[in-house]
Length: 151
Image 1 (tube, rainbow, N blue to C red):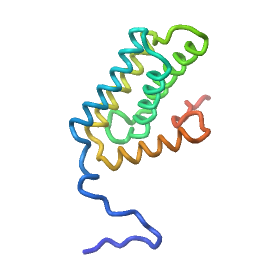
Image 2 (tube, rainbow, N blue to C red):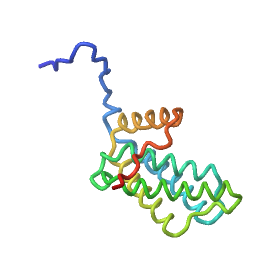
Image 3 (cartoon, one colour):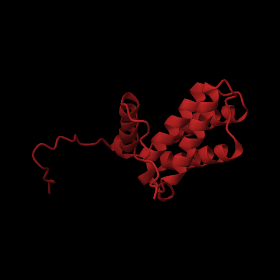
Image 4 (cartoon, one colour):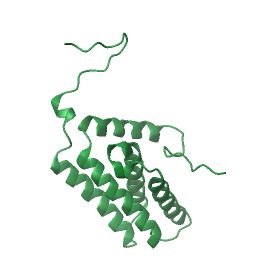
């Protein structure tokens, strides 16, 4: 039985490759790049590029948060973003590019969540999230992560 689609729905059929998870080699490569960026910043030898890479990872992990049960809570992403914002602030004031202990822990937690996401996510969802991240970066919003509600 052929599935009916609504008029105007133009989503192309997904290939088998797009429905499969990312390859193990790709997951390892991405994870290694992400953790090396954190290790470089952790040793005090990082720079703005590594911090921006980590910020992109936090945003991508946020966009993929529904892919794992552990990733649903928004707070870890907020904490990691705040930690990286503090690091950027230090860089802008000609201070060392480093993360304080609590900041490192917050960023590392999101990297571990993202590793789980990368291992679980179908390729098409990963690519969709990357596209959403590119559109966010090209836009004018400050963050894709909603601010905490106060009050």
